[in-house]
Length: 261
Image (cartoon, rainbow, N blue to C red; front, side):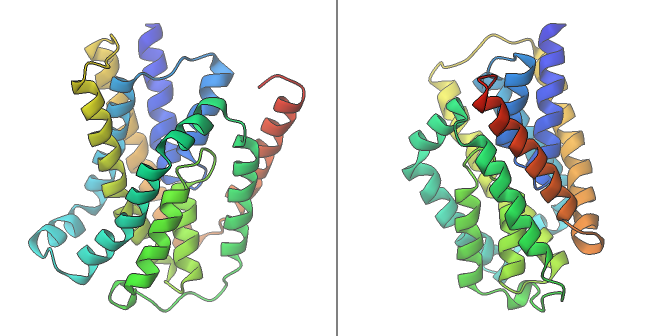
């Protein structure tokens, strides 16, 4: 039962925070500390990522089918170009990011920084004019670079890519759509890398029921988060997320100062 509860908690946290602009890696680290949870384990972590991948596919399956049918379309090439810097940053700084994730030393500051970025992005009152056909490869490379930087715990991938898109003059609806499509190869890449480690024998013992429940929870929560975020970015303000991140970031810094974290 304890194993299943752990899988449900981590699945919900992964699903919601992967797509809301609050940092999934930061929240997973925080929840593990708060609830005394050990690392999810490589197998469960892989399945949680797989669940969030299913969520994106469920929402954007038409775009995905179109990209598969037209591998040299502008949208497909934009995703490819945006994925290049993300992959390079992930490979070159993998060990450093893993150390930051293990210690959580800059977690509070990362939450605060994400909040500032979202607040600034929300000040772009006029909607951008660029839709998918008007996004340049330079725009895509910049957004992809921001996605790579967001591997740092506490820096939100969706927050940084959406904000970066808005700063590049991309309209709000397209910014959210492009951000989530760009997450596909990033999440898939994480699943592949973790799967390689699994085949090397780095696997923990965990029940099939816990795996299945954790994956399902991550997929359902991820689907809800994507749908919710698409509505928020088009019709509402991002400042609520900024305030939330400033509160939680300040709390982490205070906890670190007094030795509770």
